[in-house]
Structure formats: C-alpha cells, structure tokens
Length: 227
Image (cartoon, rainbow, N blue to C red; front, side, top):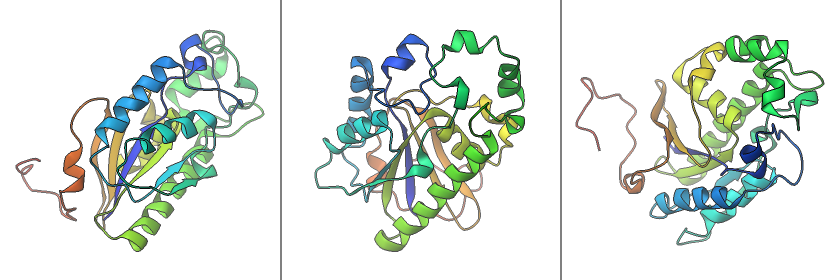
C-alpha cells in the first residue's frame, strides 16, 4: 500500500489575525508560515516523493513550493480541487471572534454533520469530496509507482481532519476532537483490511523511515517493536 503524507499549509496572514480565510484569493503564508513549511520540508527531505498533490489555493501552492525545494529530484505536482478549502459561504472573510457569537457556531463544534454554511457547503459534502479525492489519488499512485510509494497531499485544516476522521473510523461529529496545526504532518496508509494511521498532527521528528520501511497489510498483534 502506498503511503499518504498529509501536510497542512503553513500559517497565513489570515490565521495570524483571526480571520476565516476560506477560499478568499490572495491569502499567503506569513514569515512564520514559511518557517513552518520549511521545517516540514526538512523532515521530508530524505523521503523520495512520488508526487505532491495540492489544493489550488495560494497558501497550499506556496507550501508545496517549499516542500519541493528540499527534494533531491524533480517531483510532479498535481492540483486537485477535491482538496480545496471548505466553502464557508457567508462566513468567509469574517473574524472568528465574531463567528463564535453565531448560533451555528455551537453546531459546528458539537454536530458538524448537521452543518451547512450559509451560502456555502455542508460539512458532510466537504468530507465526502476530500475523502474521495485522497482515496482515488492514493490508488492511482500505488498503481503507477508501486506499494512502496510515498506521496504528499497539501491541504487545509478541516479537510485534513475530515480525511483523518474517515481513516480512523470516526463519525464526522467527532472530528473536532482532532487538531491539525499549520504545516503539521499526518500519515495514513490505506490497506486491504483497514486504513493505518501512523501519526497525526506532528511538527517534529525524523521521517526518513518512510523511505526504508516496507508497508505491511497486517497490524502487529501486541503492538510490535516499532520503527
């Protein structure tokens, strides 16, 4: 089975000022975000990547360029609309502090599966199209590059949380229990028996083992010896 590395974009000007950017054009990484992306790139520098798939939004494209800069060989890049940010509709561009006063905010926190953003997308639709995208792309990578292939998807916080919730078998209403920080790395493998979630929301640590550890379809009974 191929290995999917989920990377959230680095911190943006909107993140730093408490705005819900959504799909607003021109939202870029700030200096801290570029530093965060550079650390993620350093962690992946020793891992030959089959491809990087990115959300079309600028902050993800910028993060992708930084990741590419630490790869030893050319890596093809694919832009995938299925990994784009949630369409927050009328909430887009508004301060989070202001949105927290909306009645819908409590539903977003407690029952995301019941949420449709005014003028925008429902959260179940967001999860369905993002999970479809990564599973489709993962199958393609494995077919084209083999079961030892490692590939990266650069996306957004709620998108990555949705993908992780699916891989963990969590109902969407529980996905707010997950945290996905800027430029964090999470790792999923879609096996024949079940997805294997190797890590969630990591910002430090050596990942060179991804280049040498062969994938296993079976979970080690008792936990195994680790890497």
